[in-house]
Image (cartoon, rainbow over all chains, first blue to last red):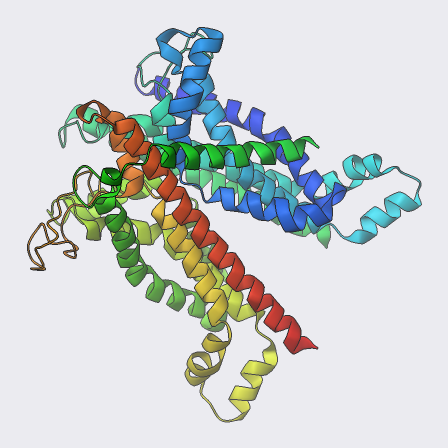
Length: 231
Length: 275
C-alpha cells in the first residue's frame, strides 16, 4: 500500500476544496472589482484580507465542533461525520480569501482601455467581464488558484482535526481517510526515531516539500507567460 | 449579491467563534495556571517576540540587499525565487525542519527558542519582501539628494531611506507578528505541547521561569489542537478550546487592523506630500 492512501487523501481533499472554492472566489473577485468597486475596495476586500490571517487551527476547531456534527446528522455519515467532505469544506473556506484577493488584484490591474474598447464595440457589462476582463486577468487568477491549492495541500492541523485519520481509502465522500500532512502531524511524535514508520513519515515530508516546490515552479511559469502577453 | 453572502458567512463564522468563546467565560479559564489559558497566552506573545528578534534584523537586511545592492542577474533571480519558495512552504514542513535542526541536531528538549526560530523562518520572507518593496517605492530624489550631499551609500540607507520607509516596514512586521500568533503546525515538534510556568520563579536558567527561552512552551493555537487530542483529560476542554480560539482571533484581528490603520495614515501622509 505504501503512502498511496495518504497521497490519494491529499489529492482528493484539495481537489474537492478547489472545486468548491474557485467558483465562489472568482465570483467574489469579479463582484468586488467590476460590479461594486466602491463597496469592494472599502468593505469587502479588507474584510476578506483579514480572514486570510485567521489561524488554520481555528478553522479546524470550528469544523470539528460545527461541521462534523452537522454532516453526521444531515447525511447520516458513518464514523460520526469525520469525512473527506468535512476536510474539503474546511479547506475551501480557508483558501477562499487567498484566491479572492489575488484574483481581485489581477482583475483590477487589467487596463481600463480593454473595458472601454469592449463597451465601444457594443458589449454588455456581462459580456465585457467574461469575454474580455476575465481572460485578460487569467494568469493572475490561475496564480491565485495555485496559491490556494498549495495552501490547502500544506495545511496540516485543520485537516487532521476533521478527516478522521483512518488508514483506508474512502468509499465515498462521507467516509474518513487520511492525508500526508495529517499523518505527519499526528504520528511523528509517536514513532521511534529511525524506525520504519518514522523514516516513512520523513519521506512523506520530503514528498510534501517537493510538491510545494512544484507549485512555485508552476506559479513562475504562469506569471512569466503574463509578462509575455503584456509586451 | 451572493458574494455578499459569502462575506456574511465569514462574518457569521467570526461572530460564532467569538460568542461561543466568551459566552462560557469563567474567571478561572483566564487564569495563569494549568486550568486557565493565561500561560498559553503569555507563551504565544513571548514566542512571537522571540521570533521577531531573529527575523526582523535578518529580514530587513535581506530587503536592503535585494533593493539596494543586488545586481539584476541570475543570482538575484534565484534569490527571489528562494524567498518566494520559503514563503509558501507548508508550515508542517518548516516545523519538521525545525525539529530536525533545532531539536535533533542540537540534542535539546522541545523549547520556545526552537519554536521561535521555526516561526521566524515563516515570517522572514514577508519582512524581506515588504522592506524591499518599501525601499523601491521611495522617490529617487531621496537617494539622489542624500548622495549629492556627500553621504555614502550606507549612510544614505541608514540615515535617509530606512527612516523614510519606516512605517511600511513596521506594517510588515505587525502583519508577520499577526501570522505568528496563529502558527501551530510549525510549533508542534519544536516548542512542544506542554507548559509549566512558575510565576514566582525569576531565575532565567530554571526550566519553570516564564522568561527562560529554553523551556518548553505551548501556544494558544497548539492548545486548541491539544484540547482536541488530549481533551478527555480535561473536564471543560471544549470551553477552553473555544475561548482559546476567540482570544486568538481577537489577537489576529487586532494586529491586522493595526497594520491597516498604519498603512492608511501613511497613505494619507504621502498624498499630502504630493500636493
